[in-house]
Length: 165
Image 1 (cartoon, rainbow, N blue to C red):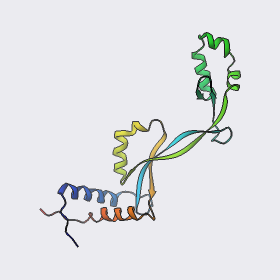
Image 2: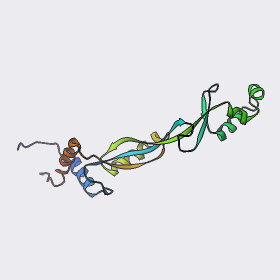
Image 3: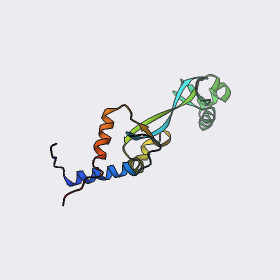
């Protein structure tokens, strides 16, 4: 076996990473595993094929909103002569729109080897997930993935390495 010289900061980082992986809650998931940011993204589906909520797309405005949102939007345009002339009846306006269902889909973003890494990322970058609903950590098993299995073994090999002074 060949000896490899590594800078102390690399060895210390790998030792800390191995310690964190060893001590963290694996949520009853076998190794190798990794964390992701999981959230829900709102998608449009044909009417009746979503989760029950509906949106109404008005091609003239190029927008889709719930009925309640359209009522508020139309109220804001109350003084607009075009609105007064064409859209005084909200129900009629909604009937002229194309109806779609909302469907919520789980999406995964980014990858972390530790929950600590996930938390640090979210503290610094959580604002980047505002467009998604309910972002949270999710642990995934990387079974039958030799690359991840070998990476996990390599990281864990540092758990008991002693740094020579």
